[in-house]
Image (cartoon, rainbow, N blue to C red; front, side, top):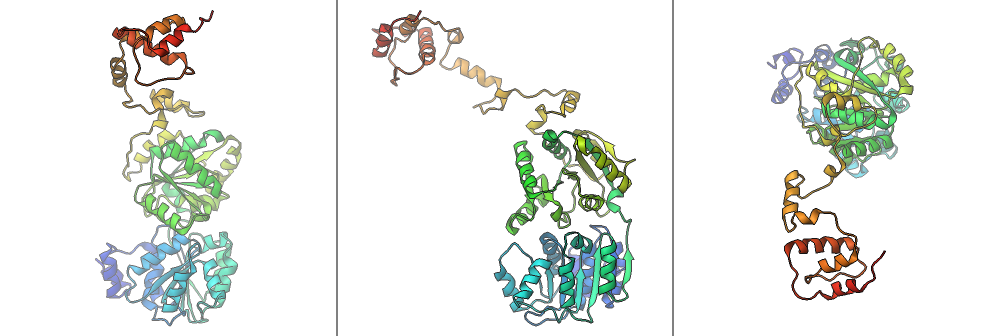
Length: 501
């Protein structure tokens, strides 16, 4: 089975390591780049997310990298986000053999990264910002780097990393091999290819907008106040889901709103520590969290298979952002759903975006609870979950779904905590210690109150206590017939008080 990789020139020790992970057949982008990469040629590749680009550049990188000296790595991989850098490092370590692979990025302590560089790193995976910091501190040198990979190059350009990337490339060896992979080949990538690659082989796989053609696209028009409830209904219909917001604060706020609506959600953005980001991704990938709320910065760094739904909670900045966000679903030949929540004042902008993307004819306007039916058509398998209580509540803009299903909003007293929470519990309360007479209307005459409170009470009450307790207690004692002896001190005191008229 692994002979296909062998025919591409991959050594046996690499094919065996891949076979242990269940990887036996190369993807399309791997078939047309691995052989050229092993021969040392520069490559400029365009492929959609989830198409196997990491192995396409990772196998040549691992095979061609030699042992390095301390603080002088032999190979360098640049990635735009911490999550992507961390994932690349893990995938390379799975088949790197004797080659040492390490990762550096911001948001964590410098200490472990300095220690790893001092010990020696053969393949270094890095984000541009932290790498430049360590270069300025003389913690490493790049003059012996013979292989450089730029992954998600178009995203690095969008995030403003191109000046840093060029400064880093200028410090590497002149006779290096440069491999560039991107989801799109726009003007920034073409300029980078011209300035930093030598006669690169251009390899393209799939359509230029694969995310658009492989996914179902739908939207709803809703007022701002009801957006969070629409998002909750959408996630409840189809999950796991990734929800995109524009700001960090907006992401955190939406997570709180979803949690109140009984949707398990986690947020991930640049303001979170690396530990928090890893924990959020772990909870989402293992199914503990139904939804992952992310900003555009994290859009390219999230590589999780099996995402069934992408929600554009806030509108994307442009058509490229729409493609990058939507690329989290409908990956590796699977299908998914892209759902946009649009406010009434955003309709014109949304229509222009749909036209630019070429989906104005195929996109559908639906209600969130119809997404489950749409998802069942994709034949990717449904993950069912009991409907939470918030589906029974009435909200502005979503009453049509509830009336269509015949649901009624839950009364307020049902949402409070009871010892039993059912009608049987009410019967128990009425039969335990109180007879039918206790539920009748209580008299307003205080003289009747004093006559009712005959029997002694185990706990004294002050005179300031309201008459309701005395009336209810007296009514229950009257029904039991506990009129023995003289009235107690409290009853005598109440008897002496003048009657209000």
